[in-house]
Image (cartoon, rainbow, N blue to C red; front, side, top):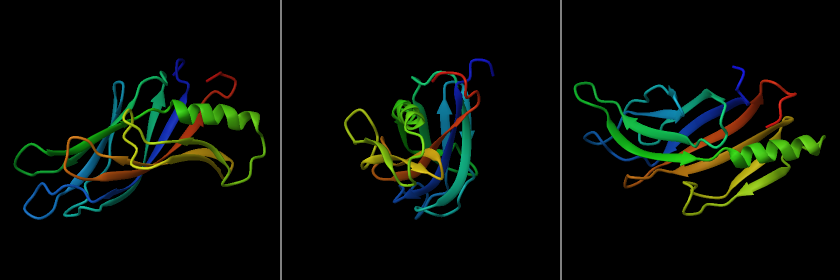
Length: 167
């Protein structure tokens, strides 16, 4: 835990218009990876617009590592089918956390930073990093790659573990 900069809390909200991998639907779940860490959500049965509303927490030692996300369809008698993947960079969130620390007392809803979709990221639309209840959070919609359709809605929050340590 000595080399940990902080914790990244990822709230996996929902999937939108996910791909069909069974006869008429899918049984999706999300796997999140960063470095050697791997976490996953529960399976939502027979749903192309699942609502997970789950929090997953990663320990961050290297902020340059991307967070990789993959969606799978749970199959009972064969290997699970991949339903797309995405990745995102946490550096904009950490920059906003540093900025917000310098701007104490920001009002709820204040936009600290905006991240625009481009060819290097999987954002489906502009992602705003805001102050919410005294914390810096980032809302994002990720467009899944390597699949015909689908997006994942999530929210990031930075949790410092050693406030005296520099990001």
